[in-house]
Image (tube, rainbow, N blue to C red; front, top):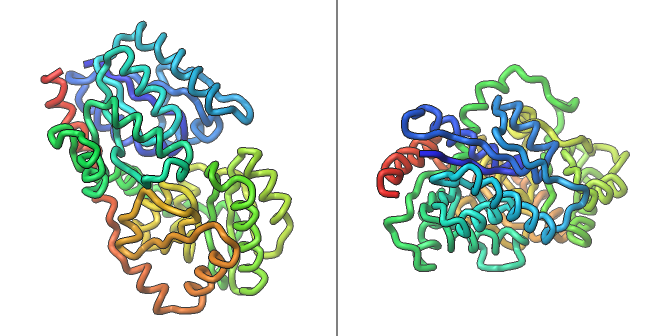
Length: 369
């Protein structure tokens, strides 16, 4: 079976790398072709190096401050050409990006089956996250196999009319990747000098719905935290998108106790997660990774498509408003019992065997295509 695994962003590759590795264990069953759109060129290249992977096809479609409509049309056009030339039997995509949506839609137009890794995540709000919530629904409408990371995600798919026989609960492949990489970070130096006497808060923020005023509020809260808590330092790897980088460096550059650094390779980021006291993020992947290290997470969004962490108690939704963010952070800094309750919660996102389950299902699926 000829399989194309399509990806364009760093999180996609992190979560697909364990699947690629598992597919390659069965060369008689799968001829695997890696296709990169390079939606996020620099950050994707970092991950390709970490996982020692090289795309067989690289569309190199990134452009500065690219607009969604243009990116979508370019991926649709280029993927259609690739599918006509390569004639794959199956396309595997992950998540909810423009790459994943466009690659799956182009496959549907070509009547090529699609397998969706991390299927069924929903907020039920089309603008949060934007455009990912609608991307997910489009992918679910055209996919042939749905690999749901949790039972909650599987339930969402069934409620939308997808037959149970097409859905498999696998756990999240990000835990597979994390456990594989965890052994490699033990002796890594910290990517930024840290004060061992201070509590380090790790921050990531890059989502489109937080551009503008929400990001201003987040920056204001971070400033309040270091101003009022001298035993705290913040490390913020700043996303290169100018809507983030320009604002964050203007508002927080040069502030005592705040380290603004460039994007990190995956191993260095894991190293910082393990060293952190708590994490503030609007990232989906970090919500899944942090529980593996028992790190409380404050989710800087109005709603999350990953409610399992909130339900387990390891994560809490904090809308991006200055006072809310400061209040919830201060509570975890000053109340040891509240911190312990969050840190002790069980990780609901998997056991590190998701990729094995996915490929096991695909080995059966190829006989039915």
